[in-house]
Length: 160
Ligand SMILES: [Zn+2]
Image (cartoon, rainbow, N blue to C red; front, side, top):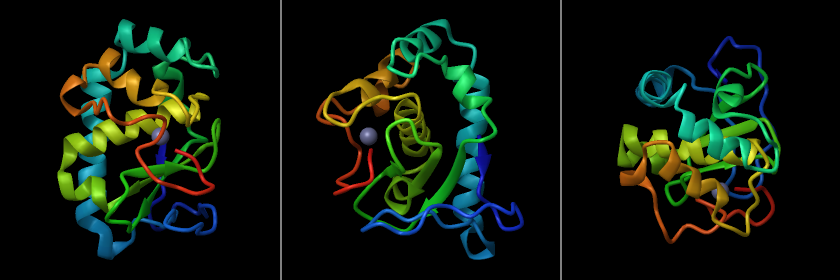
């Protein structure tokens, strides 16, 4: 996964309702540092976990957690919404965005949102608990929300 930072040359999808895929520019340095810390936590604490990899392989996309993490065609953008954790452009899509709401709650919320969205990259649907459910297998029980069915977000069209 790559961060959509200034100079990355990446252009995310166009805005759709509250879902936006913006670059982490200089004004978003605080959020970018939090995102980098979250990715570091995932790399050190979650990547390589058998239970997490197995839970991901059971999703419709069939890829392991490590496969998604190592996939450099998956991008992570920024969205200013203060009511939604994050979005992925579609089930099986490769454009994740992490919203201000997740950053407001702190780095562990960003970690949980990233893992949730990675589940959608791997084909987890939006009408069940599959994406959020992976958190339990990935050592994130404390940020798992049993009330989240399908989405950590309320997107009308864009998923998850
Ligand atoms: Zn979701």
